[in-house]
Length: 198
Image 1 (cartoon, rainbow, N blue to C red):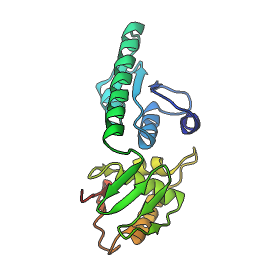
Image 2 (tube, rainbow, N blue to C red):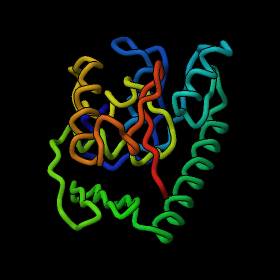
Image 3 (cartoon, rainbow, N blue to C red):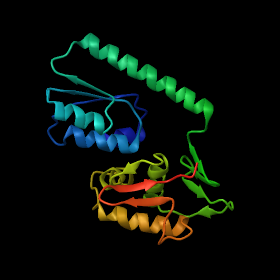
Image 4 (cartoon, rainbow, N blue to C red):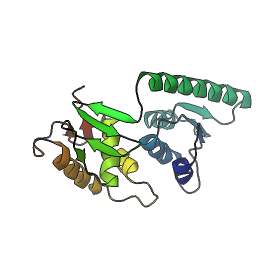
C-alpha cells in the first residue's frame, strides 16, 4: 500500500482495522505522517476506544460493519468534495510546495532548504523528510513514532532513537545555537515541536 501511495495518485483510502499482516491503526498513523489524503476506516470494531484512536491518529471518518453501501458512497463523495475544495483554496492562496518562515524556505518538491541569506542548506534525505514534516505542522507536538513514519519510506522502520540523532544533526545546520534550539524544540516525554516565528 505504501509503495503504491509513493508512486500513484490516490484520492482516498478505505482502510479496515483488522488486517492479517498489519494493524489498521498503525497504517492510519503511517499514512497521516506522509499525506493529508482522506482516510475512511471501515471495521467490525464497534468500541469507543477504537473509534477515538482511529480519529486521533488522523482518520477522517469511521464506519462500522455491516454498513449501508449507499451511506459509504455518500460519505466518500462528501470527503472527496471537501478535500478537493480545500486543496483548490490552499493552492490558490499559496504555493503548497513551499514552506516559508522567518526568511527560510523549504521547497518540498525540489527538496531544498534555503536560509535567510539565500544559501542552500545541505540535508540528507532523512534529515529533509524530518525537517519538512515538522515544518508542515508548526506549533504541533509530533511524537517520535510519527516522525519515524515520516522519515522511513520502507517497511523496515529503524529505531526511534534515529529521530533524536536526526534532530541533533538538523539543529546543527539550522539553529543559531544548536544547544539552545528555538526552531525545533524538545517536548519532554512527548516528542518535538517546530516553533515557527510566523
